[in-house]
Length: 164
Ligand code: SF4
Ligand code: SF4
Image (cartoon, rainbow, N blue to C red; front, side, top):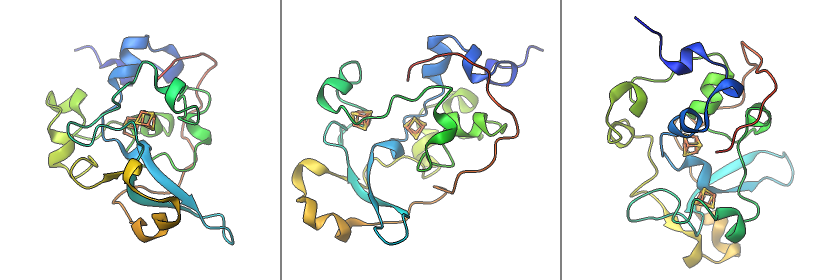
């Protein structure tokens, strides 16, 4: 039996379609984050980017998101290991660290709803930053399960470029 593409290929070797399909749609990378001025610790909130669709989930203008949100990170095989706040459950980070996708990932379960059922999706648990004043953000600091600190990758990615 042929092994699935995410086990056969490095991130940099994947086609654009394969790369995109790795995103489980959890929305955790769209959470507004705060940095502790004293410790440098990154704190997550229950406030989400204004472009996030809080009714259906996902980015409401994914193709043009960088026009509206210039600071939205463009994930690539080169930078995936350098983003400390990327959730421990994120498929890009898991594969970069040499791990497998979890059973609830849609590529394994065949069902996008398993992300919600596993408690990984932020849908229904966030409010849009459009309705929150900046000075009120600390009141929304919240711990999410399995956000996790970065780990040393077990394998190094080769050169290459992909777009999320
Ligand atoms: S954290 Fe990773 S898997 Fe989840 S939405 Fe962001 S890029 Fe996709
Ligand atoms: S612009 Fe879209 S993909 Fe980027 S953080 Fe906002 S909702 Fe997420």
